[in-house]
Image (tube, rainbow over all chains, first blue to last red; front, side, top):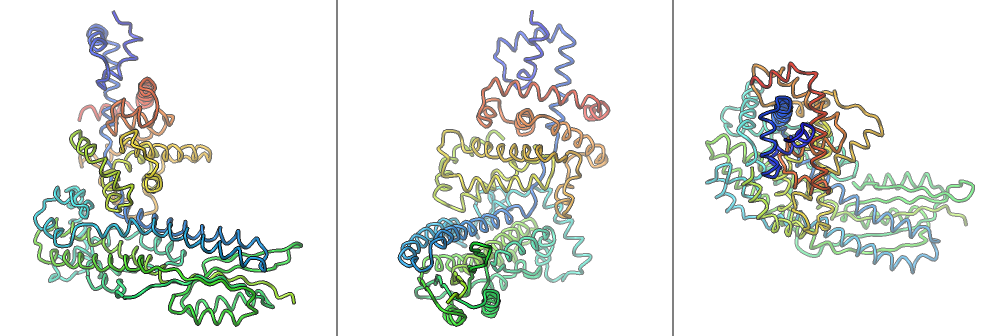
Length: 396
Length: 205
């Protein structure tokens, strides 16, 4: 006969079906004859039932948007900090003797930058390999939610439970009542509701992105599924080679503070951004120089550089160009593909009588918009020239 | 549930391959498949909706960064759960060091939409409050367990993994899993015994 102590040690495995047959039979016997152990079993089962009855929680609606944005920002920063660390290393060397070293450093920077850029861009660009808009249209048109889950694009909506759809409809009714929405719009109203459902993350995210000096495509509620908005975000496809300038300029100036202010003014006047400032102190805590990293639109690079050079005596100037044609074209291609896709979806949405499907399509359009804004950030960073400006005190 | 998992296992290899090749589509697919599960694991581990959100984000970010180091020794899902467990345990340890007490904090405080998302508790509508209290008690009980027992109990009783799968996720022996589940359930039982009333309510349902 099994002892109670042994029996109680086995109870959990017994409940979980993790006992060998012989042990299970022995324990069965014991439980039939031992009320205490049988009670213990019942109590454990009750505890387990309590755990199992805990409801599943839904992740927030903005979960993916937040995730993809965070990934994009992180990869962007990774790229910057690499750039930064190489420059810091170079800065430690004396300015005059740095020329030869810089040449090799710059090559290193660009190859490293190139690798990171590829890694960074890769996931976004491989999106282009998804199904063509036409085939997706078929899937949306003929698919129940279960089908939708299979197509990569609609995973989002396919997962939504009927509960969600019901909640959404309830929300919608409320919104329709309060906002006196356009009745003719029919399906169009739904998108406004969808926007209202998860707006919270928007301002915060926009702030993060802006602090990173990356512009964000703002989408007003009315534009949620309006194709016009998506189109406006997409740059026109241009032909020819795209170059991005990278320059390192060392200037001897009389007044660090005044020159720094001028640099800021010049940058702002040219819609550029100052990304980073590093102060350099010599012995006795005497300030010796400042390093200012800035970005300006590629189109304004030449005039900005000229203005900057006018601020002092140029002691060193390393200039280089990076060919970003492939990256830029990939972004633009993806933008135009995704706009076509949005167009197809918008058509479908306007012709659909099925509310659930409209919700699904809205989700998808919502997702597309997010991607457009991510792509936009990429496109903008590709079209910026990077200037590393080092101001040193003119000691002559 | 099982069928779904088998199907997932079958397509897992291809998925991992595409993931390693940098396919965003594959990444999205993985997020789609595991977002809710990982979110719920994190939620039960920390008992707080906002933290669960942060932690789940962190899991998928780590997935992105470390997919190249996945060698296929374990199943992909096991590996992902291992990341999730590590992320959650790190957070719990960090909190312990800072002696932050989150257990009774209301869920989703700052954000209206977060609140709305979770307001949709399953269960019978007339009894929402009662059910909610009961659930809060169970959650508090789970949160009172030492992290190792907590993980084991959540993986077993909430996420439905077998002992073997749990052993793989936690990288420990079957015996260890058994003893953690034994001890975890035992202390949970003792803790909840004080709430006998709630206990009974549940059994009646």
